[in-house]
Image (cartoon, one colour):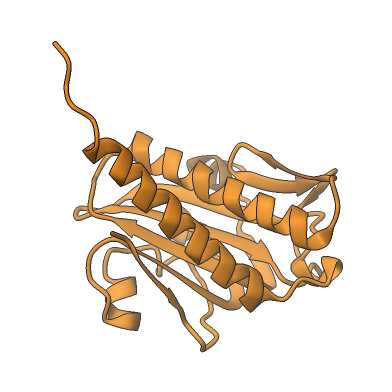
Length: 186
């Protein structure tokens, strides 16, 4: 069972929050969990996990984002990437429905609206767990690339955030049930 939590206070994301102690330190929740919060993002190159972004010298910056941090006790990077894609798919579906537009699509681990990037995401491992950071712009002013944000679609960050938390937890729960309900074959 994965636990969820909406964190009411704003937190600046600088990349250091992508660690196995963040959720426990912020919420007291231990074990598999997903949390969401709003706040700016300013990830310098030295805190970047994505080696392609490091090679391109492409730091992440946004004045306001809706962030999700996910931690699972398993240390399987391929599974973490699959869970990351699941989270991004859920978010894209929710945004498409709330924004009432068909132009929003998931491409890999990004949400795009044509040439406009809406999200950032990364999955990685710590010594204790697998971790995911996923964030969607709330406002698009001042970003280093062409972006759109939730405000451009009149979508409330807390409303969509809480819905994504619930849907991700439900998917993870039903996936676990699917694993537990089958017998092995020879």
